[in-house]
Image 1 (cartoon, rainbow, N blue to C red):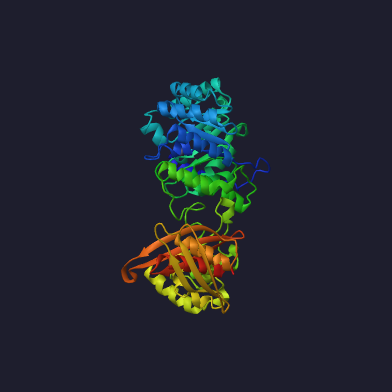
Image 2 (cartoon, protein in one colour):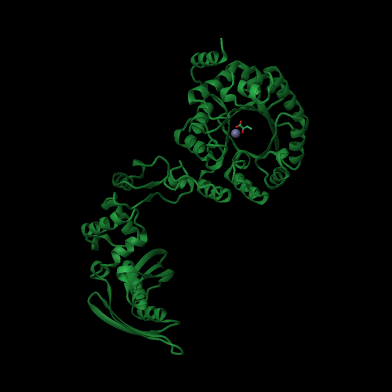
Length: 519
Ligand code: KIV
Ligand code: ZN
C-alpha cells in the first residue's frame, strides 16, 4: 500500500482523544530569535537580541532558541551573549544532524546556566529523497548519531524530525523511538511546511503516543508553520493530544507565512480552560509585540489576533453600543490581560449616538448640557467627509458651539492684552460666571500666561496645562488659529478647544472651555 494511503488510513483509525490527567503545564519554547529572525529584513544585532531575550525572560518563556551557531559568527556570538544575559529560561542552539554543527552549538552554549542542543534531520520521504538524496535507514542512523553525540556535551537534547507534517507516521514513530533511545529529552514534530489540517496533526501526535515505546521518557513538542493559516489551530490540536511544549514566536513571525504565534496560544489556553496552563505573563504581550515589530521592522497586521491595532477596536454602531453596555457582548478577552489599557471605540459614519456620547464624556463634556441629536447630525456630516473621527475632530466639532453648551458656565466678555518688547505682558479679563461679571488683571511671562494668571485671580482653581497645541487653519477659514489644550485638575484630565483670528483669544477660549468642563 503506498505510504500516503497508509497515512490516511491511520488518521481514520484514530482512537478518541484522551486528555492527560496530570502534567498540565505547557512549556513555551520561543524561537523569535531563530526561526523568526531568519526572515529576510528581520535581522537583529547581538545587542538587540540580548534586549529581546531579557524581555522574553520577563514574559516567562521557558526556552529561548537563541540562534544557529554554525550559520555565522554573528549567530554564534548571539548564543554566547544570550547565554550570559538570561538565567531563568533554558537557552537553546540549533544544529543540523552533524558533528561540526553540534560542536559549534556546544561551544556557544558554554556560559548557559541551562543549555539545550536542538538537532535534527528531515523525516518526510520528500526531504529524505530530494534534500538529502538518502534513504530512510541512513537518515535514521544520522539522527541517532547526532543525538548521541550531542548528549556527550549536554543532558538536554531536543531532536526535530523536520517536515514531520508530511512524513509517513510509521517511519516517524520509528525515528522518534530511536532518538528517545539515543537520549533525546524532547522530540519536536514540526509541520515545517504548514501542510497539516488540525485533525491530521492531532492524529499524528496521537499516533506517536500510541506507537512509540518509552515516549514518556521525552517531552513531545509542536512546531507549526502557518502556510495555510493553521499554525495555531494545529498547535492546539497537538497539545490536546499530549504534546507539552509549544514552539512559537512573538507576532507569529517566521519563515514564509510565519510560525505559531506565542500570544495566540497563551490566550487560547487562558480563554478556553482546557486544563492546560503556561508560565506566561500575558500583560506584557502588547509591549513585547510592539518592540519585536519595531526592532525587526515587521509591522503587525492591524487585524492580528491579540496584538493587532484593531484587536480591541470596535467600529460598527451595533458593536459599539453592545460593548458599551457590557464589554463581554463583543470581547472574549479583557484588553488589560494582554497589556492594552482599554478597548477603543472608533468613531466613523457607522457609529451611533451611544459611541458619540461615550467619547464626548471621555473628553470631559457634560452630556446633559448638549443637544445630542444636533451634535450627532453635525458629527455624521463630518464623518461622511473623513474615514475616522479623532478626538481632535470632536473638539473642533464641539468648539463651534462652546458657549451654547455651557450657558450656565464661564464666558469671556472682555479681553485686553498689552505686550511687546520690553513691555511686561499684562492682561485684563472679564468673565461672566452664572450671569455675574467679574474682572481681573495680571502680568505674566507672555500674553497667554498673563491672561491665565488673570483668570485665576477670579477662579482660584489648581489647574496644570499638560499640552498646548496651536494650529493655523488654512483654506476656507484662513487666518484662524485653533488651540487644543489638555489640562489636569485634581488628577483628572480635561480637554479644551478654542478658535479665533487672534492666537491669545483662541488660547483663552481653549482654557475657558477646559475650565467649563471642570466646573
Ligand atoms: O520548521 C522547522 O522544521 C524548523 C526546524 C529547524 C525545527 O524550524
Ligand atoms: Zn520552523
